Length: 157
Image 1 (cartoon, rainbow, N blue to C red):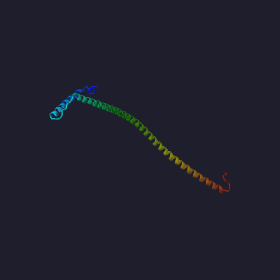
Image 2 (image 1 turned 180 degrees about the vertical axis):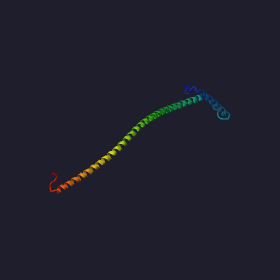
Image 3 (image 1 turned 30 degrees about the horizontal axis):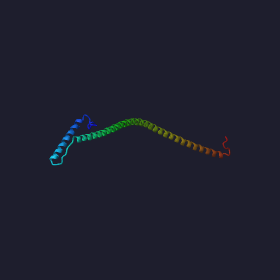
Image 4 (image 1 turned 135 degrees about the vertical axis):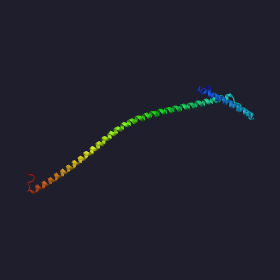
């Protein structure tokens, strides 16, 4: 793989320009070092090919990382959109269920009121029945007492 194969055609001129400028700056630094009495240094063009290859590997790795991150982001966004649609669907179902619950609550309240009214009527009827039974029992006791004083006739006419 040539060092700049990983670089898009759009970026190649900028990368080549940077490499040329970097080589020129390194060569100037080596010349300044020699003039300053330091040991001789040389910036070989092959070293810059290695730098270009390292740049290409780094660019490829970063591009792959960005692509993976983009894929994860896209997948996350689609899941969020699906969840949003599901929430909207559930909200509609909830509104329908709430309407049913409200109707049933009203029906239940009505039934409770009617049961309460019927219970009051039943209690009143039971009380009246007890009162009638007590009156009947008192009448029976009075009859028996009257019948016992009359000389043993009992219930005969």
